[in-house]
Length: 192
Image (tube, rainbow, N blue to C red):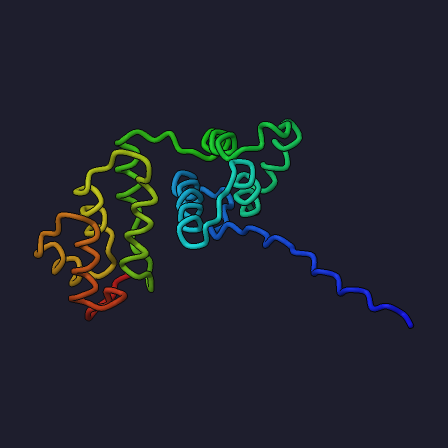
């Protein structure tokens, strides 16, 4: 009589880590500083929620998986010159800042803030986010963000109502715009 062989224990596979961050394409509209800041935030979130720890090397590979378009091509080019010890998140951060980082002074940032206007159909909160991306990592006064928001909002009625309330921060300005004129700041008349 044949003897039954004990069932094999299933091979336990480790779950592949995934970094839940947006893609970076290396376009002029994107802030490399804002994008780079999302990775450590996501790592902290995963540590707190799942107990998952990332090494600097794992973070390098997790972050580079989110480089698309021109940024992906750039990575292919520099990867040829990197040895394995240089494939760290810190090294990636230095190289990305050198390649995609803006070296604007305060005046140039003010000019970029002044040029940015709310697009038709763009929520005030999304418009405000784009303003903070422009100044991310730089010393930009709260008043500068508020002024850029008020001057760039595409609805004159909303802009007037928010200005009258004298918000001190960009968050206050956005909340006033939404409270008084709706999610899109639509109020009565949207201008182009």
